[in-house]
Length: 133
Image (cartoon, rainbow, N blue to C red):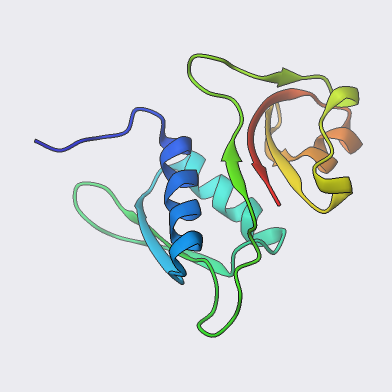
């Protein structure tokens, strides 16, 4: 019997948080387009080093390099905001600013996933998925 998380974003965020806490430099996560989009945003904003997709059966694996060996993790805190029992939505004007702009939120908008800054610039609101700083 395999335990499978029903909330794939929470699973990804928890794996990243746990890896940072114990000092691991990389993790493997079952892949999905949503997880790949979140990791891509984290790479683009400098929170994690890189990622690549490895082919596996029955589903590919997302190989996430959190930090290069010998460097310090850039993630101090990462948390899932919107949960299956309590969705958190925000208009573009009310998107939160994390740690005076040093952190970011990942928002699911009608134009896809983007950071809170990008959503505000485009005048888009949506569901706040992840908070990171």
